[in-house]
Image (cartoon, rainbow, N blue to C red):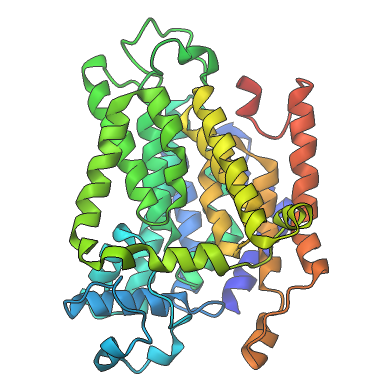
Amino acid sequence: MVPFRACVPLAKPAHLRARILDLRDGGTGRPRSGERTPHAASDLARSRREPGRVAAPGLTNDFYRYLWDGHVQLSGLNPYLFAPGAAEVEGLRTVWHSLINNPTVPTIYPPLAQIAFLLIAGVGSSVLLMKLLWVGCDLATAWVISRIAVDRGVEPALPLLLYAWAPLLIVEVAWNGHLEPLGLLMLAMAIWASDRVPASRDASRTTSHPAPDRAGPVCSAGGAPAHGQQIVAIAAGAALALSALTKFAPAAALPGLVRRLGWRAFMGFSLVIVALYSPYLSAGSALFAGLRTYSENWWFMKGPFTALEVLTGDPDEARRAAAAIMIGVIGWSAWRRFDLERTLLWVLGTGMVLTPTFHPWYILWMLPMAALRANRPFVLLSGLAFIGYYGLGAYRDTGDWVQPIGARMALWIPFLIFLFFDAWQAYRGEATGDVRLKNR
């Protein structure tokens, strides 16, 4: 349990404050130079990831599915065609085959994840090398977050600390080997690129970071020259697609991105989707079989979704109600022409609240936006997410994962209190912990 011990100091406010000051010259509170701050934060982040990187994953066996999908591809088969337990792939079984979770369900992971799995299989299916890849993406995401902050004229120390020092990120990636940083890096790149393109037409009235020196569409807040903005818009769409091809959820931000940046963002998104799905199209209808099974049957540590079940009286109706709310939020954020960061916060945040399946590592998808905005509710939820492991020991002994209502309330109620409190403050025009919200 070394990674948990490594994270304990992060829960102590005095220690956290000391680390913030450590990113500033001499502990005086004066900002370091823009070059030194990311280096200091990166050194601190790497030191915290080292114990987990060398330890065997202890809270999940998802990585066996990663290794299996890569192993199947290396043998020349389409990973979407057969579930790990299918008779058709019996000859490919490995010594760890019995450790793959849900062996009767075909893979759910999209093409960019599959390409990463294939690369890992190509270098020997090493768990250590796999975690090195994820940690590398994780630290690169931290660097991109620092560049976004610097480009916006914001001191990067706090965003870096909120992201790179998040205990959940250290445990779920450096220790447990979850692939989320691959998608988070693409997500952060999409935000960075979209910042460098001015909103189309008169969307500046809803822009998130004012730029009083901007005179027309000559240069964006990030400094991209006008002649390069078309390419950057394509790149923003492409980066969002790559994130969605790690896990699907970021695709929900596409309407907002296209509404804000124009059709070139859609073109970039579409080209990447077509290019990466093309090698796997031979799976036909099986391409999304695992996703259908997941969306129709999975549930875990559900929170506000329980209220929808009570109101509708049926889990399937509750899922449809949650989908309808999501569609409404997607449409509303697109209509308002929010920037990509705010769109993601609204769309992914709504999905996180309404999902029937909340595994602890899912909240990692909110961390880049939460760090850039110092968003208190989602930073808090990233800490409370560890409650999701309640009952893991009994599950390993009995095969039954009990999720008592008390554990679910402990996970969701503090978050919801903070969420509604900050929303009320924002509505009344008062200062909140969300430092970006005040400028919106």
